Amino acid sequence: MAPAPPADTDLLRIDDQLGDTDRLVRDTVRAYVADNVLPHLGDWFEEGVLPRSVLTDLGNLGLFGMHLTGYGCAGASAVSYGVACRELEAADSGLRSAASVQGSLAMFPIWKYGSDEQKQQWLPRMASGEAIGCFGLTEPDHGSDPGSMRTSARRDGDDWILNGTKMWITNGSVADVAVVWAATDEGIRGFLVPRGTRGFSASDIHKKLALRASITSELILDDVRLPASAVLPGVTGLKGPLSCLTEARFGISWGVTGAARACLEAAVGYATSRTQFGKPVAAFQLTQEKLASMAVSLQSAQLLALHVARLKEAGQLKPVQVSAAKMANARTAIDIARTARTILAANGVTLEYPVIRHASNLEAVITYEGTEEIHALAIGQALTGISAYR
Picture 1 (cartoon, one colour):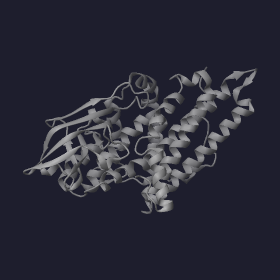
Picture 2 (cartoon, helix red, strand yellow; picture 1 turned 120 degrees about the vertical axis):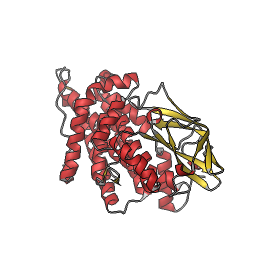
Picture 3 (spheres, helix red, strand yellow; picture 1 turned 135 degrees about the vertical axis):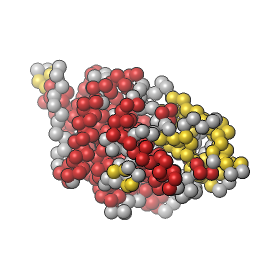
Picture 4 (cartoon, one colour; picture 1 turned 60 degrees about the vertical axis):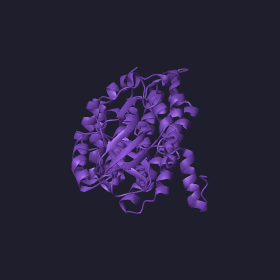
């Protein structure tokens, strides 16, 4: 059965609000993934790999740290960055995650809090894709509560000695530099740990059933000695890593709309070409109600992402607003993926169609970089003035 062409799911013409540069980003990323990624994604997902060459390609396209300025970064608008995340995740969440970690979690803290020497050393190479970075915050026993991290750093003369373990680290085993957050007597500090540093190792996490076309690792720091120049000088405390997460969550709020769009397109294409009881599945009222609800929910999520991007461009975006967008849009996306799976019925669980892959990925996306519950508590605190974290 030949697949039908993608449906036009932009019922409210939201993309008409994009500027010329935004559309160029959209079309460039969409063309790249169509030609170089989508034909292989089923195999990559099944094999649990993401080729290093794809990361090089994303750097060559200027997508790494594209929302940052200087040091080889594109200085793109928030909307352009969001559109890039959307088109990457329309292919696979793992692809967007790789770019998001590189730009928002690894490059951003160096750009925001690093010394001039650190910026010059790392950012141009990371922007081009020559060097890959990762972000070490989450630990085996401390995900939503990073303030209780056990990874520690102590002074030893002019040096620092780091010990600890970080878990669920995207890009970890291929990273040339890890931005590792550790507890010190001064508070939480960020450290740049280059690949090959004695006592530092990374091993991949296998047997995942989500984000399989993505590199996920465990980082081990065993008496890692670093010079004073490895510390990010511009921040102390949780403000550092949390500000990075806000940057990344913004990209997620856009990215998941791409995954949802891909699922809706697949559902429409399948329903209009698959015949049951003498007519297309799309001719049944129950199917059309599903498709209509999915389409309206998707457009609402896209409008929310666009609004948050406009706030970011105006310098008015608050972390709680990013929490709202991440929580709402991730939930919308996984609901759309699950509904699309029902329309494809048995075919919905095969990798010949993108739906089950997106649905599996989104099971991870709704919990990483802030679970639904954590974002709900952040919003609840903003509404009531009461913190319910403890």
